[in-house]
Amino acid sequence: MDYRWSHTVNTKERHFKKTMHKNSHNMDIANKYKLYRKQSSQLIKATKYEFYKSKIKQNLNDPKKTWKTIKEATNDQVVRNEIKCILHDDNEKITDDRLKAREFNAYFSNIAKKLISRTKFMGQGYQAQKTREIRESFYLTPITETELLNQLNSLKTGVSCGEEGITAKLSK
Image 1: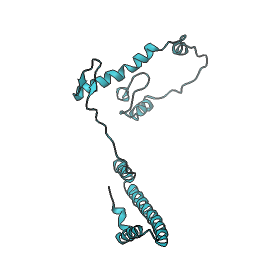
Image 2 (image 1 turned 135 degrees about the horizontal axis):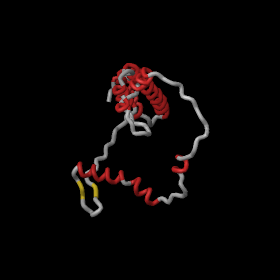
Image 3 (image 1 turned 90 degrees about the horizontal axis):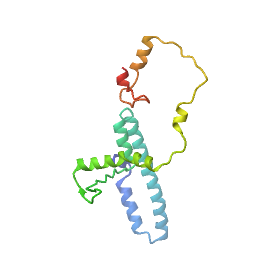
């Protein structure tokens, strides 16, 4: 955690605040303490805000550092729950990481099949819509080979394929 923002909040002020809190049995001191606590909290909050705001501006072109700063500013703690073992269908405990991964893959890849087997379909549904005849017409403007190649080269290769299953890399 980066506490460089705290240099503006004086240690003498913190000590004074602590002393006032200890002597809060006096009503006058208790009221002063509450006021000072409020002002101190507001100062700390404003100082932290300005510090992290400038730090985010400074790292604007670096997403990794920007997210690191955001996590730091929000005190976001990543909680990782490790699965030490899983119980197989026949009450066998699986502790090997590769076998655990296979079991999870098998379980999640079969969910759709199980749901489909439990569902009763009425009529033709999707198939009826797929084979529907279209009576409207439309016109496509002819393009040159160069225009087509330019469009293909502008496709991002690291993204998913389309409905036809053709990737951008294969199209190029």
